[in-house]
Image: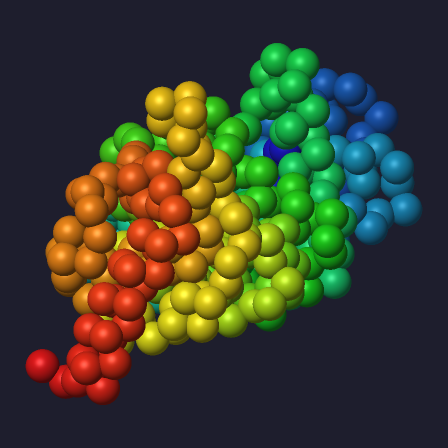
Length: 383
């Protein structure tokens, strides 16, 4: 991790007001002498020079970078090791300075910060999470800034490593900060993700560490990152269905756009459409009820129920669509059918409360509803 951090943060050296300044002549002479001593025939001299260079400030890095190209193998090896140490220290200093600069008085920057602000914000809590993300996944976040072509390989390797470790109880288990960083990178619409990487990212929110973080002190910020991921445009019907369920389970506030996109599809299973209707009913506006009108003629069966082991209640897509339209328009379900409408955790309606004993009951309720809908639908959104 140390070497990876040093490599990716070498390019970050000149960003912000804390950029590396020119080395004073006296110090430059000392650095040159110390680098030469890295190849000295005496082990003690090489060790002393290594220790001294490793203690120097970030301004020593250009000279060390040049030393990594030396003809002397010993100089090259020691220069790489020292450069990793200096870069890591500078990296931590930069992160600390960035976290402290809540008012942005110093104009400091980190890879991905501009897009992150648009998604999460820029207050102290948002900054703290961003710093935690950089500490957890510096290489991945550097990749999203430079739009590296290898982003799929980087994400696949890191996700595979973490999921494998989690499966076998390893120490590299997924942390909330790592999951946040990976979700943030993957939600960038400018990056072309492979199907394999997309499927792996979709699993992040169901990992215990991230699920726990979603209910902790970083909940608000993490949910915004999760929303950015579920709203990422995709034609994958399975992923769309997963995202709708995720938005419902985590009570995401950005569900309206996702629900609208899903409900325009014609190739999703009835259960996915039912979930999307719930999401729209929770987060939509009155006028959104019109998007469900086409489902009033859908006779696809969602579920069967036998409340008394004799009679069989049936729930169809049309029944659910009518109930969600009633909910969206702020009507009382009992004005159109018998019994109250109950809701389960995750804002899914209790399916059994929406089922009908007979088609006669169904048609009677539908007749009442369509009459109300015809009289009021053109006025919705105008009051």
